[in-house]
Amino acid sequence: MGRVLSALQPSGFLHIGNYLGMIEPVLILQEQHENFIFIVDYHAITVPQDPKKLREQILFALAVYLASGIDPQKTTIFQQSAIPQHTELGWILNCVASMGELERMTQFKDKSRNKGEQVSVGLFDYPVLMAADILLYDTNIVPVGEDQKQHVELTRNIAQRFNQRFGTTFTLPKPEIRTHGARIMGLDHPEKKMSKSAENPKNYISLLDDESAIQQKIMSAVTDSGKEIIYDQNSPGLANLMTIYSLITQKTFEQIQEEFEGKGYGDFKKQLAQALIIFLHPLQEKIHLYLKNEDELKRILHEGSLRAQDIAEKKMKQIRKKIGVTL
Ligand code: ADP
Ligand code: TRP
View (cartoon, rainbow, N blue to C red):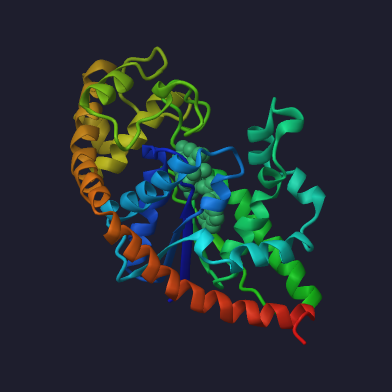
């Protein structure tokens, strides 16, 4: 039984890509491993956040975890900022990570593009805090979407370097990336991943989208000019819609092809929209129920943070000794 750890940023809303790429894999792993899942509020402030909204977003992210079936009895759920050891280890790892390796991170390049000198130091340093998140708990497996693979690889490099310099201290984590669904593409631009920061809401299906929004977004999703419903990576728009349909209905691509034999894109899109509505409806109801009970949400976070704190402080004691600051 290894340790599984993952996290989400509380940055507004969550989309179906976040659910299929990260939350669902965590649900599957939750049954066989010791699990940690948390809300990375200190990662979220690497871009400006309205403090009042941030608080709501943290509670929302937790409600999504719980509504999805992440069980606080099986999984330690907490808020990153409640465990100061994350930022403490982040600082130490800053002194092990190199500028060169951080400069190669594609997410930083994407997120800082056109922002010039205004970009925060935190955005640049974000992967080092993520490495601290992972290494603090001797994590074996990190379920993430494809875009985070590079950050987990960086974490391994930092851990290896630290282990060489100070003696074996950290477990080397592995990213767990599902074969289909690790990179759900934007509905309006199927060559780029579905993203919270997309300007056009037609890029994504939010977990809270209502029936008519889902129908409109799916019907206007970009597809190529083909006719048949056949999975082909050279038709990225259709392949993406088929991937979503396959994951939420648990049908294989062959089954989907059979289901829509002789039918066109319009029929398929209608059916996909309907399947998404059916899939999201119970999730939305549960999210709203959890959000009504703020005290319960805070209690769950508090209990999780007590468990996490215990493990994190034990690890920090070892680390402080290794680097020579414990007198
Ligand atoms: P975003 O990039 O939309 O802001 P986050 O960075 O908060 O989302 O990602 C949260 C989790 O969801 C991460 O594990 C990430 O890899 C995963 N994820 C994000 N976008 C997608 C996507 N389009 N397809 C699959 N997984 C995704
Ligand atoms: N960087 C991740 C994202 O944007 C979130 C994250 C922070 C994370 N710390 C982590 C994911 C540790 C997995 C493990 O999605």
